[in-house]
Image 1 (cartoon, protein in one colour):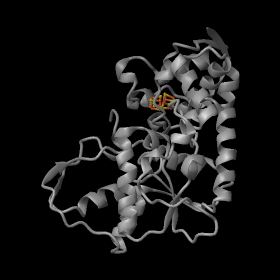
Image 2: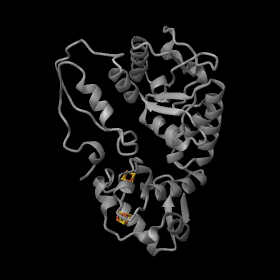
Image 3: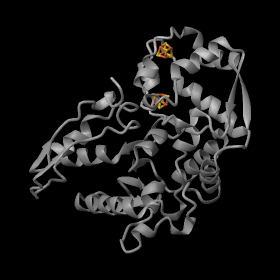
Image 4: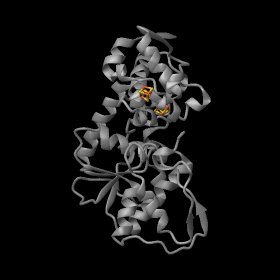
Length: 307
Ligand code: SF4
Ligand code: SF4
């Protein structure tokens, strides 16, 4: 389905008139290397044409990974990613989107996760562990927000189980939200579904309040990003698990004894590194593991995409 999007609205909302067509956005975009999305070209079309037509199901705008490289590199302070999200929201409104996206959004609305899994199974990863549920009366150091993918994907459930082991080993008093935990909405918002995002946010804020969750720890950089930056009026503290582990090491509550004898590298997640400036904690942890040889990638930290 073809959707017409008005250009003047985008120009004024995102200060597109400042664009000097330098192409830094396109040069840094990891998707543009496959020639499917040209960010500079998009802004040029917005400037030159009164309205643009997008195919709501097949538009190249759906290729954007929301990594934010374009916005962080623009010398004129334009945020092309925000332009893309605004256009996406109009494509979503048309109701004609790819079935995979429709299913993920519908499942998030119905079950609180994008994977089509029942809410009652959200806590299965911890079935044989004695993990307490967060309760306002308990004096907890933190509440562990597990996240949809880690809670349901069997390959990642072991990550949550390992996290429990680490926190217990360090003597951290923590709880989880159990089957009441719902999607954080980071991706929902970036797909352009602002209405569903607001609903998730409202419900999650209510749950955090009810459970006394003022110190949140997340597994995913995406959940971390949205709780930290887009959950106003949440006034609690949000940390990524790499920050928590690094703190525990520095407080000498956690140490490593086993020699691994591995050569490893580290990929900076967009939502942790370039979007939230957390570069050193994960590297600090790796540096403390005996027998680990760390090799930095050529394009590290905020330079993960095209230089
Ligand atoms: S980096 Fe900024 S100024 Fe340069 S082309 Fe992209 S949007 Fe325009
Ligand atoms: S956010 Fe990343 S993937 Fe999306 S247009 Fe910008 S640079 Fe490309």
